[in-house]
Image (cartoon, rainbow, N blue to C red; front, side):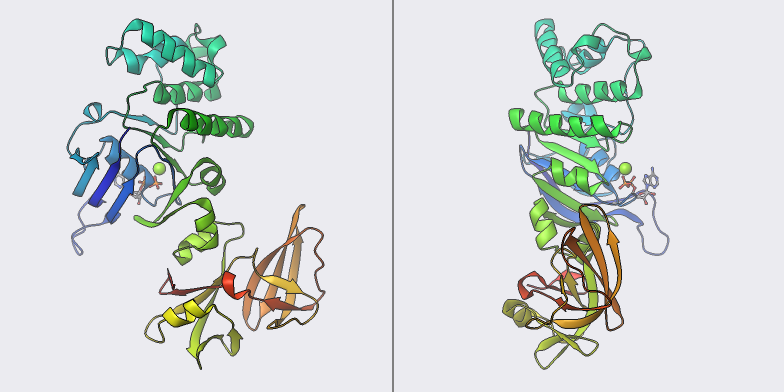
Length: 361
Ligand code: ADP
Ligand code: MG
């Protein structure tokens, strides 16, 4: 296992005649600590696969360095990096047995046959493939083939890290859930360094201790699922994490408080102290889970029009109009919802301020 560090890392697949580079990855500094289970989460096209391929050595970055435990590996080929990678679609040998497929990464490294057997049986047991070890891979279902791919990623105990690139895409939802739990257990048992790429926030948030959120070739935030939810470092993270995402309202400063149109929104003292007073666009952010909606006027509540209520089984989404802005609130299924008009409360400790997209204080 290894600590993986990116120094000034950037990648452009092709030069841009105007700007010099057309970055798929913008210059970044980042550290993946040894033994961590990380999810790498971001929308399609944000650069996740590019980053994984640079870490595994399939791609040489156009700028910067990759270090494993302080050693520069930027130009080392994949086979000299000690990385296991599992891709979106199964990569297995159809004509070989399941056993031989799982044994392949070990035999390739001249591991003694006795140990090969022990490791293969252990991994097969974890992935519930034991009964299929003697079968030829060709006749298996897509789910089973992808399980073998996962097994091939997990079978070596000496790797610096295991990289998963959306490995459960082709897997049936029920099995997906099981495999995600298995991976988590395997990580807890062996303390492997894992980087798990996904565009699915539920997958990332349940699997990982630490989530790296990427957007447009940049790392936007590294945090626990709770940190990403409670204190998104950037408006993108607020919007991307959560369902529905965070509400944002453009605001300005007047007489020491944040004002949306002519409506004053209370903010915490430390936010007010750090808020830039001019020069940058400001936005108030509040999670639908934190915005309170009630039928009666409480302290600091703001009058709003109730535009719609969606009942989603175990919760409700209320869309409220505050002046010309629409806000979403997420309420328990049995919470009372005022008809037509109601009152909104922004709890100051849950209300964030963003300057030019970045969190203030
Ligand atoms: P993700 O895995 O997050 O979907 P990728 O790393 O595959 O994103 O892609 C990042 C960006 O780089 C995208 O704009 C994509 O079109 C571009 N890209 C990816 N692979 C290549 C390639 N081989 N040649 C040129 N552009 C590429
Ligand atoms: Mg990808």
